[in-house]
Image (cartoon, rainbow, N blue to C red; front, side):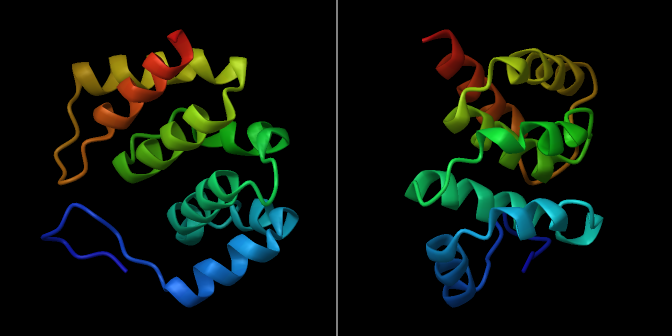
Length: 125
């Protein structure tokens, strides 16, 4: 659920915990095709990678579809995922996102540049 006055999203903890434990990565990658569920799916993939219930590196081709997005929420979650999976091909799109956001800063309560910058630093470390 999203609230226009907050800088965070909330998702059902019961559903999230179940999905993270079962890690239906194929179903989630299919879910990325539906624009309505992209942010929630990215959140779930991030949690799955964090919990190490599945390795989602092989999903980079599906995730890369959103590399050129201007949506700050998608950028934030993508950068968080890229930080964890460290796919070399994701470094360039992270730089491009940061440059795009520097030229045209998003007018939103989310600050994707924070996560993007952290992901870039993680790649450089």
